[in-house]
Image 1: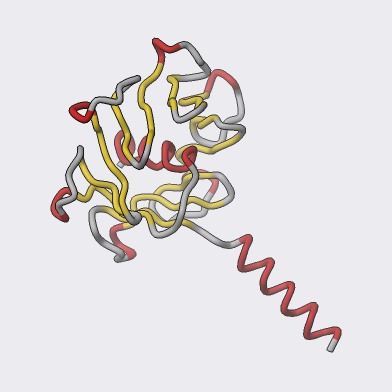
Image 2: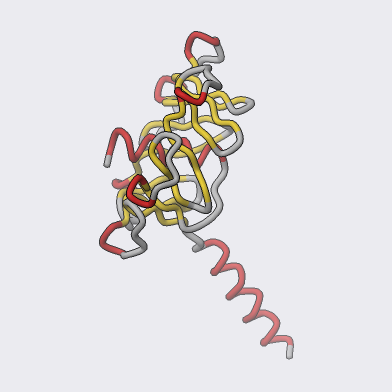
Length: 158
């Protein structure tokens, strides 16, 4: 009985540590359409888990370039739904605002400035809800920091 409990806990911990979030192009869930994979706060190219394929990593509300933790390699800083360029917290450096499932350009909350909106794991272009406007699909729940890393990957890497 003791061995069964140990095996169950071992399998559960392996399953938890190996959990990955996949991001697919458009409305797809086909493995050939994977844009990136998130595992252990790192965003990898396509379905890779190789350290050389790290696009960015997430630590303490910051998105770093590749596998760096150097302050000069901070791509974005996130605070209260505001996404700042680099290591800034200056209002003039806000590149996006995320609020109520919508991503707005800069510091705006105007409906005409919606870059993308998120519904049920689908990320739509602008304020659309048309299936033809799905930019990418996320197969699991993500944090705001993970979403910013995904969006960066979609916009600048993919």
